[in-house]
Length: 263
Image (tube, rainbow, N blue to C red; front, side):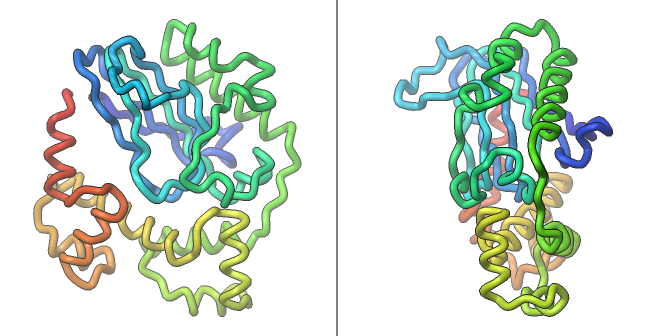
């Protein structure tokens, strides 16, 4: 499996945090590719071979808007695989799509039926494009058009809070954050509910877990005790518990699943 992480081009850099591309030339059996919670909503395009997917009750749309996910999103894949995920700054979700963020938590909507994507027939253009470069350009153009057609209204306390939490890898005292923002606990809860889609505490846990997952991925899942302490977990057991909460697997089970997927 080829994985690329791209920096978004300057015209959409204020909307998109990063772009992830997953590619596999041919997969001769059905496999489930999980998208793990990372604190960002996403626009995801998936190209696969539906004829090889035998799990008939798992309907999949090629072009999906995902809100905050608190568990793994399962992408059923087979044949030639291309997944392009544009991860959006979370506080922009309501302005761009007209939903409160909570409405999209752990939900995905068929974006091909929505507004500019429908009008531009974006799904069909992506499916019929002959190259990755053309698909990326289509996605870039769509997001730029979407941002220009919407009035972006953001409570600036939210970007500040999100950046603070992410900078501290989720290991932050929310009481201190409330004091910095001059808000009550209830106000912070309301801001996150409407603008982010999860509570401040849960968002912090997602960021803490994802920071640990990145470190474990780089060191091939060794020295879990150090990873736990580096990322603010009380001990290794708390890290394992977080792993099970967000992936439904233990760290070692997750590593085995990843190794089973063809390179």
